[in-house]
Length: 125
Picture 1 (cartoon, helix red, strand yellow):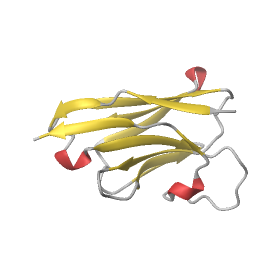
Picture 2: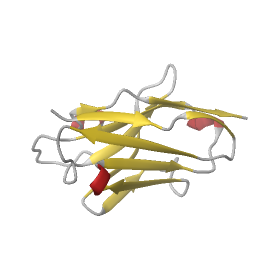
Picture 3: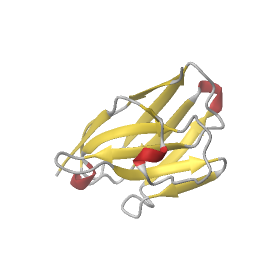
Picture 4: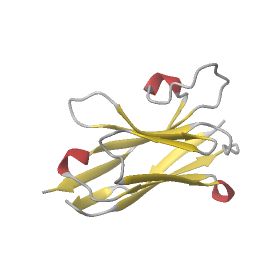
């Protein structure tokens, strides 16, 4: 069974940077679609970024500031967060899809069947 564990969150000032990591254990996930979501207090979980094979997708709100990458040798996915804003404050979740699918709904949280526990990102103004 694959497990996802996020790390790298923290408190940073506006304009700062963080790098989030999502390490998978239990199975090689190099072919899985992977994504990042975030959830702020009182708000729904929202799509941040995702990739499948060599194609990467970003929410408009983070495009140009966040970068998604993966290191298959370490079974790890990274989300580099630059030029952070207070509105980026949220719990960030790593997600993966291990089971087969017909349509790639990468922005939908219910598309993914693997989730990490989340890591808090707080951006102060």
